[in-house]
Image 1: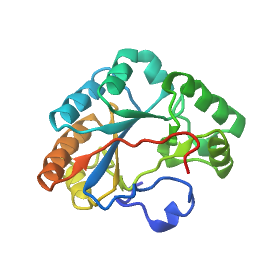
Image 2: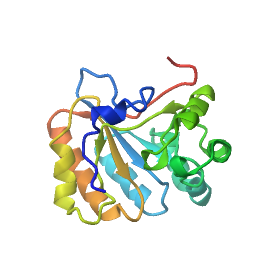
Image 3: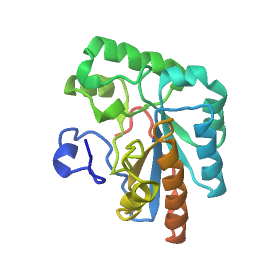
Amino acid sequence: MNLPVVVPRWIQMLYPTGMWKMASDEKKLYLTFDDGPHATITPQVLDMLRSFHAKATFFCVGDNVRKNPDVFQRILQEGHTVGNHTYHHLNGWHTEIHRYAEDVQKADELIQSPLFRPPYGRVKNSQVKWLHSNGFQLVMWTLLTSDYDQRLSQERCAKRVIDKLSPGAIVLFHDGEKAEKNMLFALKKLLQHASSEGYQFEAITYKKGSA
């Protein structure tokens, strides 16, 4: 399914407690990466971010943290933030609440972050309630790169997001194999363009118990 770059308002209303955009009157962007850490792709992302003095947020799959602990530690050491993306990349729509909760908790043992993004953006209201009752902040996105879509050219992937940039936007990339080609190209183009426009790149932060 070809998803829109900007999340429609009616979809945002389905999850009103979700963080869809950061409040900011300044030129700040919030780059996020789902599905890692990956042994070779995530380090390339980190190198690129460092060259632009950019910070970002990585929503990690617990099993990938287990497989790539050194990459995970590098993310933290370089000043980025991390979030929980479940342990097995579960589709919430197809998962019972007890299994979903156990999977999130298992990932939390490794990731230890109150930030949470549901894989595929698919989560039931019962799961959202459980997440909030356990101190997690649901983080969605403002702009979807669709870097995983093999039908998109690298140029199109970059342009569709660059054309929609706005202060406080949360931009969704993926540091996984399916997205690698488009993601690395689009990320570099976005960093170059947004930097030239005076944007700064910050990581998302949240503490349990925050309003």
